[in-house]
Image (cartoon, rainbow, N blue to C red; front, top):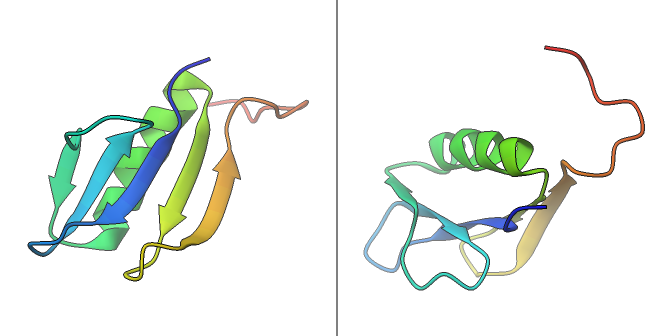
Length: 74
């Protein structure tokens, strides 16, 4: 299982995709929607959890990509 992925607000604007416990962002985007798409792909590839944070830093949504008994094809 890979690292859990977090979508977090960047203090200087925009949004970051960060692997669990990483200091640096894997990807920086201008908007949250793009960051979510990228983070979702990474967490699906790594069969890990996806955590989406709000501007306040609190977790708003969580998605698991490693424990589905019936993973969709394609």
